Image (tube, rainbow, N blue to C red):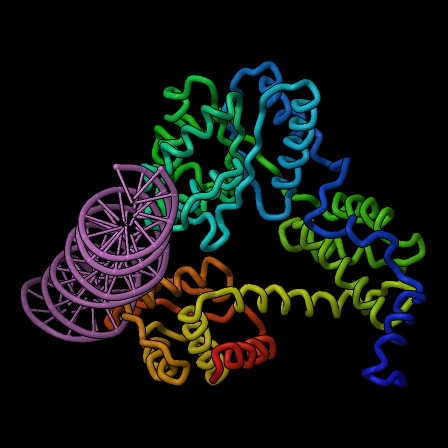
Length: 404
DNA sequence: CGAGATTCATGTGAAGTATACCTTTAGGCTTAA
DNA sequence: AAGCCTAAAGGTATACTTCACATGAATCTCGTA
């Protein structure tokens, strides 16, 4: 690098003059929802049909949407509700859409927090703790009555919420309708797990599952069209090299047709290409991006975990690096206990440790499976979810973050 | 040799505890009439 | 007397602990061939 490291004006100047691969970066971000969604016409029509009564001020059926990650559930729903909302405001029809992702830790993963979040969505604040849940219900209830009209509650990753906090919430929410005079609520549940419906209380299921819609995974060709469409608006026409889109789709199709993953991969590849001053995204960039993406995802996930969780992870990682054989709860816990003092934490009980491992498993940070070793008892068999070199990187990251 | 009993190491459910945070209440102080 | 501030009291959700029981296949036991 010829540039002086602290020659910032020059550096920014160069950046501005540089020929960017992107024309408009925002179109390829996963938060962006395009005007037109491909290969989802059938689902869009059904959902729109279910929700249409909103516009006549009638309560639409509750809706349950399921399909694997990256099959466009959230995008489709938001796309439809956005349009619905627009038309509603145009014609002065009272309609409010609340979208809440139940997976977000410490945001909406319990009954209380979900309600608090709903209240916040309606424009009011409520304390983060201290009040009885019933109070929040009545508060929310009053808000609804004031709202006067239909409220669509979109609960994303609803399976996570129910797993943690039970299905009573859903029951309570659906029951509110019979007591509301000037407002009505409709629930829209989104789940990654198709078996979720079987696990919940039949009463809840019958009311939540008034309509069910399945999102099948995309195949490689479908992902290609999606990528092309996005790339056309987000990047320069000649910004993408031969075969890149194809390979990108193939990656994603292998991962159960996850379109979000494909988009992210393409974006990261393009960013890498740009940073390397390349004029085109090549397959080499794509391969780099795949590695980087995985690392970034894990890093993000890890750094947002509470400290205790991080130490638990550190213990598991260290064991995983040292010995490639399978790790069991006992040894992990022993190591964890020795690790605690150095980061200034009081060790947690094994009971809690077990729960935390379960949560880490659900987050995909580790793979833990309960097995019976016969005479030698029952335990979890823990395997790392990442390659060895990545694990080593993450271990260092954890150590830094814990100040060890 | 095989069927059933035993055993181990930890999973897992229920109930209790600690902590952090909230509202309400009561007292004390200030202020203004 | 009314108004305002503060501290104590009383209440809640959540993370964690404690207690107690559940699990499930490798291993042991013992009767039988």
